[in-house]
Length: 349
Image (cartoon, rainbow, N blue to C red):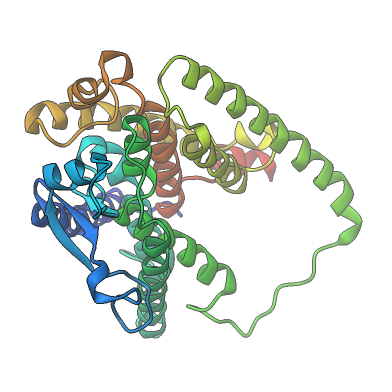
């Protein structure tokens, strides 16, 4: 049964507000740094905070002082740059960065809590506990990842890849998505005494062949697409970040809409929501960048053009499109409009 339009709008508004608030937390870290680097403070030892050495001690230093010392061959004191403004909020590619927490909160609210129309009072405490554990796991994992990524790359092109794929806010939200999917798969938030029947293994071979055939076909399509996008400077020069998200899209698409075209054609509503939602999202962030002058869309971007040259103003387009295809695909599932239409179901009977 599809979700009522009022509930669908409420779900979209709530996850958008939560994503905005979450991004503001990380933007606050950027504002704290201003035009300074956070550099590793070696005078306080190697272990760092929390008595576990997860994070190093850091201190703020003016950028010109750090650059002068690191570039001077006669300088005895060199600085290890830990972070700078942009590593936490990614304002220059805001349209890309905003999509990840949108997906995370959508999964948390719609698929774990059952918000807004399937909030079970009996299961709610257990589901809230699950979300709390997910958030805690995400934070712990990201503290380790931040330690590993303490020495950020500083080349101009790597800088954009860094902001779009590795800074703290995206790390946290990516981990939040990963743990949410894991806990949902394990069924930790809603146990049932009714066990489903074991699948008939005699049907596995035919289905497996068809699934693998179409999966590799789709992977081939996105591989060619990514190569074209990179060559056209519509994607990050380091294609690993872009390509990984396209692979995730392929996997979720097949899980959501079926593993061959004979299933896809019966799920036109969900695919339409995915495509139309993405096409509407792009101009929204384009207009937001023009209105704010700081929150970059990730494509057709004066911010990227100024930083990297006009030929690179669209390098975030591929990543942005793949992220929002995933978000709107998950949204279609959340409002229960990713299945076959009524007419298709009637014909089947």
